[in-house]
Length: 244
Image 1: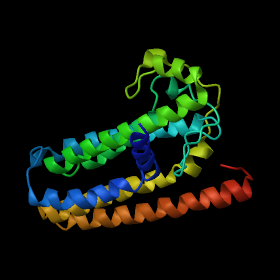
Image 2: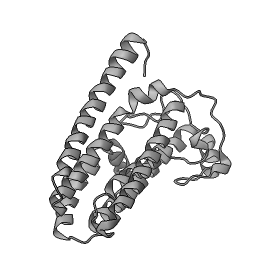
Image 3: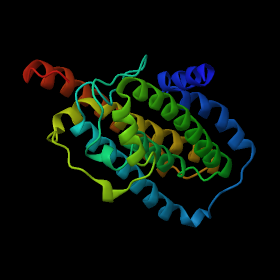
Image 4: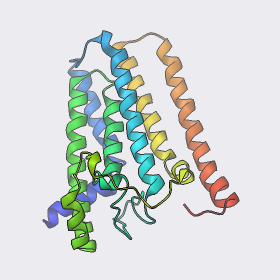
């Protein structure tokens, strides 16, 4: 168990960086085994599915962040932090709505690259990483909250949604918190879409129209990144005097 927990802690700490390392390994393999998952004329349908998955993931994450209790569900990397146990809102229908949202976004981005090795590898890596992180987090919460956690975890699905168990949160929705803290996620999404379009441009040798879309992703990423930082550090912290 100690080795397992250490591995889960490692994945938790570097959960933002490990997918990039994995892609460095997976991309050359994908180029060496050119086997498409779906017909090329289905790309429009796949892009619609991709967009829906990404938007659903963004919505799940935004809902959680907007109603989370203070000092929970944060971006902390070095250790787990939970001053209280979230059991209402989306946490009443699934134990890990944030991770579910991230998973949907990740798969939504990856299916745009029509290569079975790439998509299958991304899926396996995501499931493995989330399994280790979830087990690590469950042990932390069980040790901290004891029977309160055990009662909630027994009644709440681990990684699927049961809408029949929904309990409204008493915490009001806070859109300012979402805008001030979720912009790195949106930058990562744009970076992922940019990467996929670059890969598709090289892999499938598409026309020059792709270059304009790539430029658009770069501009969008810079706008969201700098705009988000300005909103958080100038508008929220300096003008509104709020701690996010």
